[in-house]
Amino acid sequence: MNPLNLIRLEPAEETGVFTTFSIFLPVYMHSMSRLCQHIMIYRVLTIAGSDSGGGAGIQADLKTFSALGVYGCSVITAVTAQNTQSVTDIHLIPNTTIQAQIEAVLDDILIDAIKIGMLGSSSIVKTVAKTLQGYSGPIVLDPVIVAKSGATLLDDHAIDALRDNLLPRADLLTPNIPEANTLLGHANGNMFDRATGLMALGPKAILMKGGHGKEAICSDFLVDTKTRLKLETPRINTCNTHGTGCSYSSAIAAGLAKGWTLTQAVETSHHWLHQAIRQSDKLSVGKGFGPIHHFHNIWTERWDDSHVTF
Image (cartoon, rainbow, N blue to C red):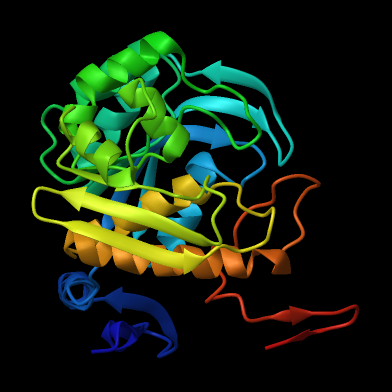
């Protein structure tokens, strides 16, 4: 039913001119509610820091959610002054404000999955863990410790708090090699060995990311109690890799929100991320480590000096 058909013009009693509108509001609302029932959306919450350059953090998470067709909500834990070259300042959001943001979202919106990124301090780690105690959906934890530019984003006390308070809550932990070594306190063993060691700290599954390796083939390893999966892609020669970890974990959270299995979510996100990196050189953003191309399968325009073609 077209809702516009529910609007009726009524003539004035004396003039016969159509001067007033009468809307059958109950029927209109019923029609609209029936239309809305056919729209299925999935909602994902990201709890992370803001990147003023737009390549990582909350900005990368929300771009990833949009690119993959889920509705994104956000809780900002820190505001960073950041571009493709460096992080020049960090302002941590007060714990009470972080708690209030989480509660505001969860009290009103049915969240299908949560991704956690930069937390910044031990008190923020504990605040997030405490506020999420009543949440039962899947949680993807990306242990953001060092920025692409080399800036430290999590101190030693916060790393201890992360181990004790959030790793046991994570359905999936997604460390890169340096992050895994920091959480374990050593760099012993192969990738599967380190993933097994991290599982002993509480997460239900580990995705070890091989992006910091030097081999021609980039290998990621997904490990849980039943799975040992190796994902491989050719390493791409580009410096536009800012925000890869944030985007990867957000893509997986989007897949879990849709009800996919962990393996399906990881494999699909792995392929999507590879394409986003492969096509990142089509963007020209900054003078350092540029962002990946989140919308590589959506932005089809070709711009020149005079017009746009599709």
